[in-house]
Length: 130
Image 1 (cartoon, rainbow, N blue to C red):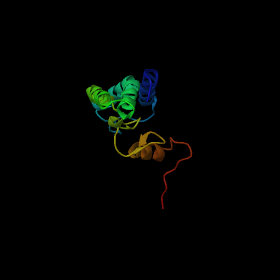
Image 2 (image 1 turned 45 degrees about the vertical axis):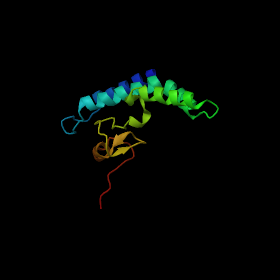
Image 3 (image 1 turned 90 degrees about the vertical axis):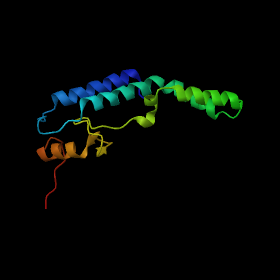
């Protein structure tokens, strides 16, 4: 889980990449800013509730506790915000904010990768032609 300081660094790195990139933003479609902000909000919530969620899960799985205590832990877990669950996070492209066609290693969508590669802005990567 990401800590709040890491979240700030992630947001700043994403914004600096967008602002300082040599890409003409008119040529590349950006995702809705509200969707990107919603994803950042989810990342903050996941980081904020990670320890609480983990402790409640441990209590709920602990066989040495009574059934009532484990059930209370499950109810408390259900009362946490939905967006604080790590399974609700979705990877987005750092350049376009696109949620689909995402390569984890380079944190970019396939479309942004192809654009940068064809312009020669990624060292060592060339678009093949035959």
